[in-house]
Image (cartoon, rainbow, N blue to C red; front, side, top):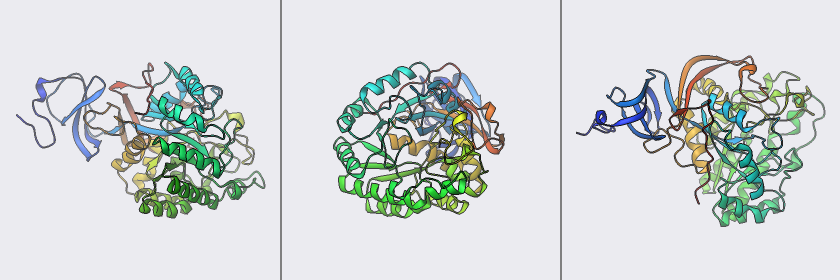
Length: 448
């Protein structure tokens, strides 16, 4: 006999490995009361919440929300070469604690950077057997490595990262516009993706002093907008698919929206720190807030939320870029730039999103479904039959006091220390098994 609309019948005769029930399961159709049935690491079926089911383990979350595992496509793991900054074991444990079941690792700040197949192999050796979540990899586009892009693509990287301004590390130089065009022409030829750190070096300067105001003035929103306009022009002219990373300035929204309306293949993301923090509240000397591009004003933050709600910005990802504490000297001109927030992104975004009237379905779209689609990762990004059983039990009403000493990042320096966020991750399942204990993450490679 068929079951009620949207649910299979004959449930009690089928045996599952795991059933997770929630009255607030966030599915592609919105929040629903369902029982998620798991077999062999995949979601076998969605049943009515109270359906009698046979399972080795049956967990009833009641009114605790059930989210799809988050997909964070912007994570700097830094291993090999700078594993004292961060490594696969610590980064992926932090990810699991924050409800992230898939990360895509950036090609820098590891040594060697992932700019050829040999460097990718070094990365795979460093990560093997140490990952608590599933891991994919970006390749890098740097001067002189156009010949390496297709081999990396064929090996399964999800796309290519480039900088239009200096990256901050000598081993990963930026592309000028002619070099960027050549790389995009090559990437377009095999149907790949370029992800771009977009700041125009001609509009950047050195900070005039150690204060946050002077650092912010050295990296104006105009530098982001100019570079975004250049990316749009190059994508239009080459036909390549491009994605703008970590948009911090609302000045970028107008050209991005116009490009989307025109049909140019350009998308964009932003990050939790741009959506939750504000320049007016950065404590002087607290360089845990320093990142490039920088955290801007509260008014700018409001406009980013509007751009996210309208779909101009499609993804919210961490840009987790940690370093050792000694590099975060109390001088915004000299300190290493990067915010560590991999474990805290969901709670940080939910704190602000709920205050602004957005639901968990929107957060799941921005932090799971859309990043999975961006990187082309099938089976991730939603609670649906046939997908990986990547699930997160999330209490959206719990207070979440942040103590940096309790984070799993190798160097737990974070601007969220001492804040109370809203929402707590209770359990993360990776392919139907609790994540964060024995590593059982796998490598993800793009389909070719």
